[in-house]
Length: 89
Image (cartoon, rainbow, N blue to C red):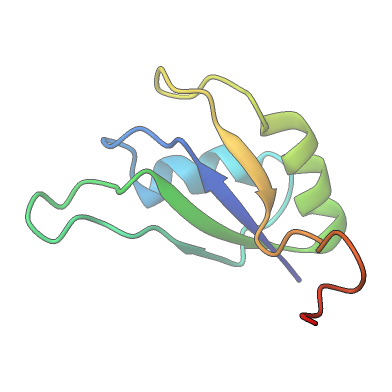
């Protein structure tokens, strides 16, 4: 299972919209889309859980793609640390 961070989502987007978009590449296991407490609109990002190979295919195809007049940013939730193992000295 791989979790993807999806950024630059239009505020009017719904969980259904994002699920349909990512379902083209495989089964969406889970989606978390934070919403503004007052307006109920999307805060502009979501987390999508998919199987590894499906997630990689979705990331490659959807990163930078225009969706609802916004260019999506799709990447791993936990990016790899650069440097010497990510430890503090």
